[in-house]
Every structure is written in structure tokens, then in C-alpha cells.
Image (cartoon, rainbow, N blue to C red; front, side, top):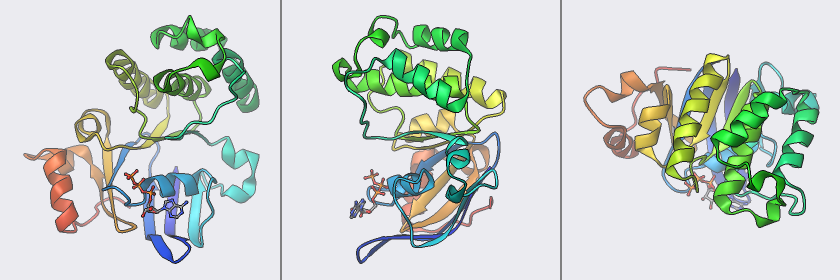
Length: 238
Ligand SMILES: Nc1ncnc2c1ncn2[C@@H]1O[C@H](COP(=O)(O)OP(=O)(O)OP(=O)(O)O)[C@@H](O)[C@H]1O
């Protein structure tokens, strides 16, 4: 579904991604973890075309960014920092996105608005939204559009407990319907509960990518993560 090969990215003289390889299969819910500054956001920004890179290859469903809009239609991205049209309502904005992606299921749209408890806010300008409300609008857009892969940077930031439950439910349903999820997180307990696979990024490379069951065994993801910061473990996917 998503294949990254030998990716290198530097900001001026600082090399952040150093030959990163990652192969995400259809149906995976991949939790992308790594210490502060490991390069998670940079990786997501490279995949989604927000920043450029010096070397390597990024493909989604065999398409690279040179395919233009067809490449962009393969994913929906929820960034950590959200810039929105302040005078446009969440409702109008999602309608616009649905048109862009060719999605027509308004019934599902209404259901998701209700699930995220956004009935009142959704018709108001997005400039009046709290951070959590903006995150909910983006999640509603992602699940309504339902592209081949949903990519998210710290998707649980700002969500209340009810929204976290809805998030888990909708991810499960989306993957059952053929979707793939790739998200960065610092919340290892959530990753443990939501993800089917985990990839650990260290010094610009993936040092572990495996099924959550294989990784966990007797240990928590937290202790695996701490251990991986010290010792490199062999990746068994890729
Ligand atoms: N625009 C930029 N210009 C220069 N350096 C940058 C830029 N963006 C990120 N970096 C550097 O690249 C490295 C990786 O940053 P990145 O935000 O990708 O890490 P991260 O794993 O997402 O971190 P965190 O978990 O703290 O959010 C850091 O050392 C950061 O200082």
C-alpha cells in the first residue's frame, strides 16, 4: 500500500531521515513511534508532499507524487498543526473535500457528525472552534472520504475520552472496509490497544516494524520502546 525506500531528508546540514525503509500493507493500523525529534513528523510531511526530500522513493498504491492529484487522492492527512479557512464552516469544508475526492455518502457524514457530538458546532465558522473540535472535523473528513490510507500526526491530541472511543470504533470499521492507517503517536498505551503493527523510528531509520502481538509477548510497548532506544532490534516486516 505504502512503500518508502531508502529515504533521505536533511534540513540544511542536519540529516533527519537516513535511509528510511518502510512497507505498510493494506489493512495495517501502524503506530509510528520514536523519541522527540526522531523524524516522525518529517516522514509524514515527506509522504504527503508538504516537504521535499533529497533521496529515495515514496509510493502509495504504486503511485509517486509525480502522479499529482491521483497520488493525493490515495490518502487523507491529519497534521498536528491545523490551518483552516477561519470563515468557512466545518460542514461546508467537508462538503468541499467530499467533492474533491468524489465521495457522495452524505448519510455517513451526518452519522459521523453525531458520533463526534459536533451537530451544533459543525455549521459554525471553523475560526470559532477549539483545537479538539478542529481535530474532530478532520477525523470526520478522513472517515467520510475513506481514501486507501489515512495518515495522521498525533491524532489523539486534543480529543476528549468520548472522541477517543469514537476514533477507535471508526478506525476498526474503516479497516474492515479495506482501509489502511498510519499514525504517529507518543501514547504507547493507545498504540498498544489500537494498532495492528508498530514501527519504531530512531536516528532516521526504522529499527523495528512488526505485528503488535509479536512485539508485545510478556512486555508492554513502553518497555519495548525504552529498550529499543538503547538496543536495535531486528525488523521482521519489510
Ligand atoms: N523546518 C525545519 N527546519 C529545520 N529543522 C527541522 C525542521 N523541522 C524539523 N526539524 C528538525 O528535524 C528533526 C526531526 O523533527 P520532527 O519534527 O520530524 O521529529 P518528531 O519525531 O516528529 O518529533 P516530536 O516527537 O518531538 O514531535 C528535529 O531535530 C527537528 O529539530
